[in-house]
Structure formats: structure tokens, C-alpha cells
Length: 242
Image (cartoon, rainbow, N blue to C red; front, side, top):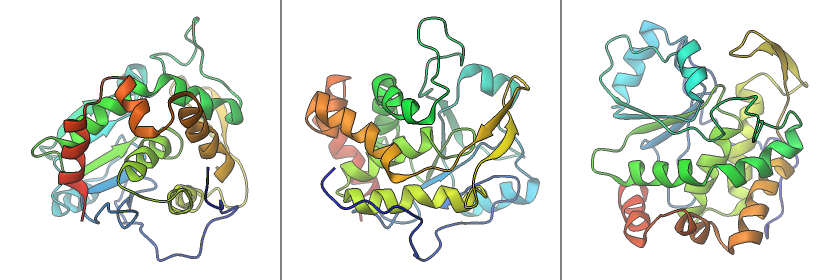
């Protein structure tokens, strides 16, 4: 990481959009060359309200990239209320939280490097879908739009020329979007188990990006190692850049 990293949420104009029934919904644009109105980020749509669906329709939504596991989708499927967007499931983490070969780390500091190690195929697929004809406007979401979504959006923003400092500033907005400004809050996961949702900090995402750069040199080369082509990267720029 080369830029100074913010250690708290920046005092920036709000990018949040009120979508009833969806948490932490905001425009990911205005960072690097990523233009506004083409890529959004949020929590899941499993409690999407009809009014929220109408607001998504007004945004011209064409694609939803869901980063959750298949089990999460089964328990908490996204609602549509008549929306006709394409939905794609691209799990960031191994299929099951308790996977015996690669269980999800419970410790937040361990989760972020782990995501970098496991998310390559998901990130490649997301880049390709966002660069495809008709791929935007799009929403990328996981359960609450904080960790898995944070890494995916950071990768896209970096590919489009955003500085680490600007990426982190956008990343940290999730604390406000999820009511985590004052500290952790309890929640029930997809199995009904009570867990703790913790605030995010710049060093967490930095650890993911550091792992990627240390092992592959750059984010673009990390994606190339998992199958991305130069044509895929050019198409992403064509669809999303200002």
C-alpha cells in the first residue's frame, strides 16, 4: 500500500441511496475513472420492499452479482417484486462456512487475507460480467455489503485507476451504512447462530490487497493468474469508465 490510509470514515458527500429493505446501498462510482450510476454496492435483497424494487427499477438495474454462498442464497433468497434483472451467484468464499478443508476464519483480521486467497475465480467472473454488453447498471452485494463486497469493489476501483486512499475512504463508509460507527453489534447468521458484526478498518482491506500484490505483483496480474485476459480488462474499462 503506497498511499496514506484513513483510520476513520472520511467527511465526504454521502453516496448512500435509500432503497427500502436493502442495507448499505450506495454508488461505488466517483472513485478513479469509475463513473457514477453504473456500479452500486449493498447488502442482500432478501428483505427488499416493493418500494425498494421500484427505486432499483428507476436506477435501470440490469445485473445483480451476489457474492454469498449457495447455502446463504437458499436460506435468504433475494426478492425481486417484478424486477427482471439478471442475477449471478459468484461466491467469494468456499461454499460452506464450516467447510472442513477451508473453514471461513472467525477472526476478522484473518478473514481478509483468506478472501484474497480464495476469491480469484469470483473476482475474475465479476470483472467479466461487469465488462459484458448489458452488464451495467449493476449491483454487487453479499450479506451486508461490507467484507466480500468491499474486496470486490476495491478490486474494480483499483483496476479503474483509483488510489488506495480513495478506495479505503469508500470502503469505510460501510461502518456508517450498517450502524457500526459505535462498535460491534450482534446478528443472526444464515444458520440462526448469533454472531458479532464488527466495524471495518483500513488495515483489514489493506491486508487483502497486500497479499495480492505480494504474491502476484499487481491486482491485474492476480486476475490474469486466475484467467482474466487483457480483453476482459479493456471491456471493463469500456463499460465503467467515465
